[in-house]
Image (tube, rainbow, N blue to C red; front, side, top):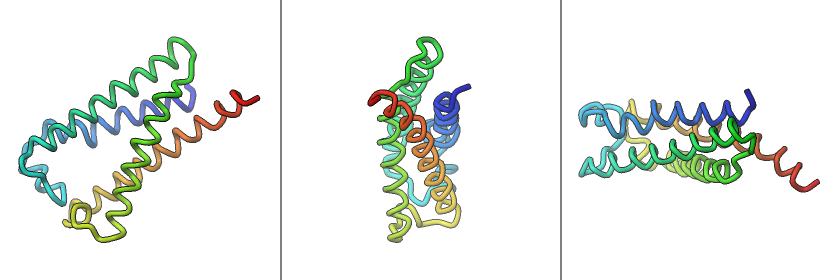
Amino acid sequence: MELIEVVLWTKIIVTIVAWAGPFLLAPQFILEALLPQVPKPLLWLRLLGLAWFALVVGYASGLHQVRTQGEFPFGIVYMGILSNGGAGSILLLGLLTGNEAVSGSKVGTPLIVVSIILLLSITAGLVLTLIPQLNEKTL
């Protein structure tokens, strides 16, 4: 299995299990226990979960492209770098500046830290898969 496949599978699984699934399906009392803040109305959180599921479809299409066509999914990788790197950076900045949206609870703050680590690790993995591809294109 190529590194790009490992990174995409990791992203798909983490997104479904840690973010999209809970935001779409978890009862409000569980979300309130896990998150520093839960938006009112809860509909906004459900929409975010759905948007993450849409990204999962994109990542799955990139995985399909690699496995069936043997092509590197440049567009999906660029999307992932922007999405994961941007989200990880915004959350990290919020945590470092004491923004209560990310540092407002005893349970939520550790979950945010884990999310930051996952997001930035996935970003690093995507960048590592991209660099050799760019080097091949320029040669």
